[in-house]
Amino acid sequence: MKNLVYATTITLVLASLFPTAQARNLRDYNVTHLGRSAAIPNNARIQGATHQLDVYVKVQALSSLSIDLPEDISIRRGIEVKNQSGQKIEADVSINNRKATVVFSQPVPPETKLSINMRDVTTPGYDHIWLYRVYGKMVGANVEIPLGTAWIPTYK
Image (tube, rainbow, N blue to C red; front, side, top):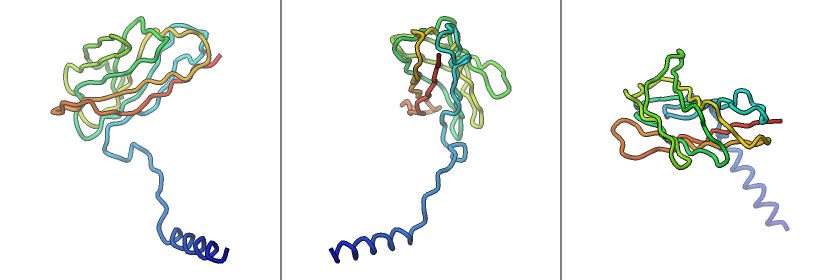
């Protein structure tokens, strides 16, 4: 019992000597990442909502995105991409086998915020959190990099 008390005391003393890691906002880092995501409107019974997610392009230019689409949804009016100024970004969009691919006509430069708008989304109409896995391909890279998973909740 005495050894357990000594071991615990030593562990606590050692743990207190090291600084605590601080959580930081992803915007502070120079890595392309996802931002806000939402359904507009977020009422599950209203069909034809826009599912929107933001992508912050950082150090390297972005040449394309791919989005894994959840089961039970369909996108009837395609995907539109805009920058932080609201200007439409030209891109070739294709949706095949639960995967959307967005290939930009011109690489998206660093320090650009993209709003990806999946328009006229139909769902089964029940409360759910829709998960979209998003990948990006940087200029000069041959591999897709995972950017994160967008959570888009809908409510009744």
